[in-house]
Length: 130
Image (cartoon, rainbow, N blue to C red):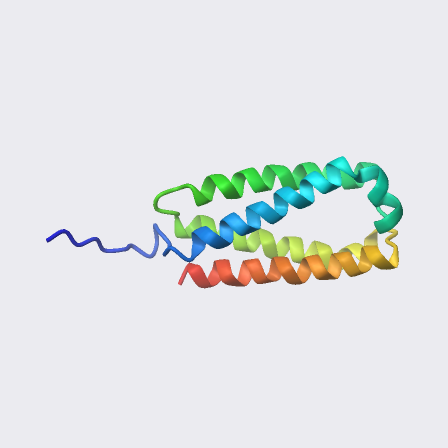
């Protein structure tokens, strides 16, 4: 009989992989939209073209990193916990953005919606580490 015991400090259950991949996909889509459509989005959302392009690049790099972590077998629990914490930092930034940037009403709504979605990812990721 071959029995494997999961070490909670070194691996997560299968619930982490799908949410990491979904998080990666959403970041990639948002990153591509920010990079490709920065000139259109600056009027719609409010931030400058440069700000949107930088955010797009950051999101694409983050998406690649999330995809890479999701491909690990097993996925280290500590990594998922760190990803969740970085997502919570993104939530804080999204909540602060309307106070720091000159956003349109649509831009403010986008920041709040983004914060809610990313907070959901963080919650599921933290749950997967238990």
